[in-house]
Length: 272
Image (tube, rainbow, N blue to C red; front, side, top):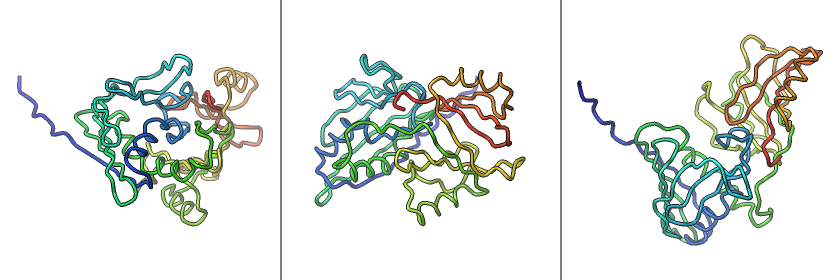
């Protein structure tokens, strides 16, 4: 049997500067993660059940998606391996091979928050904190004095707009219309790319224009309390199902109305 060479760990990082001292930045990052971690169709492993994100404040505590607010039961994402308030926070993933470290460095009158993810093997979402923290945490610091300290309740109606080049469209919408991206806009588009803006509590989703239906430009998304019942009703009453129920963070299916317009129905999250 030949031995396979061990792959060197790969690290990626991101930083954001906030206008509070390190102790306060650490406190907001951990205690208010349910506020700054954005609600959205693909922002949880299972958005059909997730109420919020939680970081338990002790060494050995859990990082988890909360599915039951009374018991704090949910999907355990990681275990806290370092807990140094105002200095350092680290956790080991329970869902993949990613170790994450968050550093709080004093700079001038504020703090630089740096997220470092070390990929020791497979990445099944553990590196998401590197991608989302700069945008989402900065947004929360800009708004936390004016907004209630609770997770945003997203509307049950969203809009998907199809473009030939969703990435170029996203950069234009941000620069010209001033729309807030729910995560960093990628440099290029792929089948796994999800681009979403939040306008108030409404999701605006940018997707590639399907080649077989060039005329499709806009598809409303309706979030319902019981997706299976909705699917059965739509199917039994004769609507054409374009996309069968699928699950990628959110669960949804797509159907045509009497005029040929497409509608996507998705399972509402508990916060809706």
